[in-house]
Image (cartoon, rainbow, N blue to C red; front, side, top):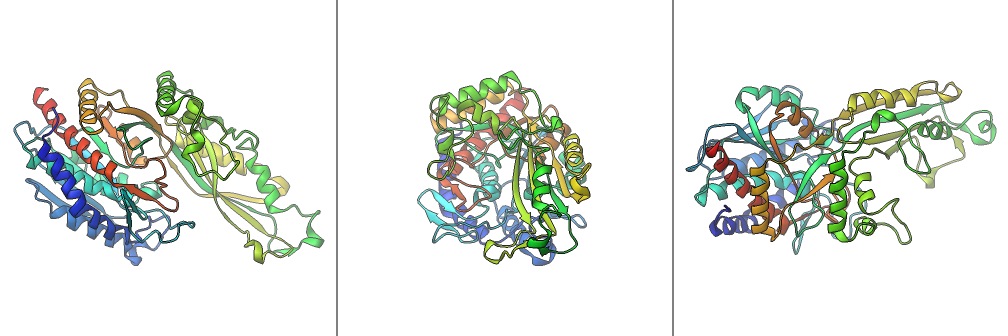
Length: 480
C-alpha cells in the first residue's frame, strides 16, 4: 500500500523549503567532470560539490545512518551513505542501492538572456542551471524519500546511497570504488537510479534500456605545417577531405546508417512492441518526433513514431561532437591546414559489446590511411549499455500503485538513448537484482546543452514514488 499523506506533505515541504535552496547553491559550483577539467584535483570544484552534498546528507534526521567520503588515490571521491533497516518490516537482507552523481557537463554556449550554467534561476516549476537535473537532485531526492519513509511510520530495508563524481566522464573511477565496497555492499536485490529521463511530465516513466558508447578523437595529419593553399592544394590532399573519406567508412552519409557490424544487434521483439506502445501513448504512431527537439524552421527529423524511438534507443548512431585544427571562419586564411581532428561519439545498442565495437571502429578508421597520411584514434573510451530484466510481479505492482497514487495512472516503459555505465556494471555484478531507473530529463530539460532545467514538480513526485517503492521492498522482504 502507498505511504500516508504525512509522507507526501513532508516531501512537498522539504522540496520547497530545503531542497530548492540547496540545489541553487549546488548549481553555482562549476564541478566539471574530470574529462572536462583534467586539473579537478587542484581546481577544487568537485571537492566543493562533494562537501556541499555530503554536509547536507549527514545532517538528515535518519535513524541508523552513517555518511562518509571514500577516497582512492588518483580518483574522484565517492559519497557513501548507509542506512540500517527501519520499521516493522525492515529486515537486514539484501540491500537497496540508490545511485546518483554530482559531476557536471561543460558550460555549452547558447544560454538564453538571464540564464547561465552556474546561475540558478527559478521560473515557476523550472530551476535552470547546469547539473540540477543531471544529476544533482538525485542525492537530495533519495535521502528525502528515506526520511519520508521513517517519519511516516513506513519501513525500508538496508539502504546504501552512492553519489559519484565521474559519471559524465564515463564513470572511470566507479568500478574501483565499488570493488572497495564489496564487503559493505553485500548482496543487492534492488537498484534505484534517478539519472534517466521521462517522455512526459504527467506520467511515471521507467527506463528499460540504455545505449552503450564508444568515443574517441580521430586525428588526420598530412603536413608538418600549414602552407599556402594556392600552391599546395591539388598535389596535397586536404586533411579534411581525408577525414571525410575515413568517416565514410563508418557511416552512410545519406542515411546515417552505421557501417560497423559490431555496433548493430537484433532488436528484441518486446522492445519493438514497447516502442510502438510508447509512440501511441505520445500521440499517434507516426507523428511527434520533431516536436521533441528544437529544430530550425523547415527542418525535419529522419524518422517518426516508433521508428524514431527505436532509432534513439536500439540502433547505433554516430555523432561528431568536437573538432580541432579548424580556425574560426573570421580568422581563416587561404591555408592548407596540416591536420584535422574530430571527436566521434558512437552510441551502441544496449546489448552490443562495447570492447568489440571499439576495436572494430579503430581498425576501420586507421587501417590503410588514404595517401599515407598519419591517422590516429586516441583518447578512446568504451562503456556498456544495459537491458533491464523483466519486472518481478511485486515491483510492477508496487510501481503501478505508487504511480496511480502520485500521477493518476500506471507506470509506462521507455528505452533511453543515453548511457549510464554504472548500470551495465551493476547488472553484471548483481544479476538477480531488480532495477528502477527513472529521472527528470523530460521534454525541453536539455541536459548537456544550454538552458538545462530541473522540473521541480516532477522531481517532487518522483521522490514520493521512491519512498513508496522502498516501503514496498521492505514489505516484500518480510514475506520472502
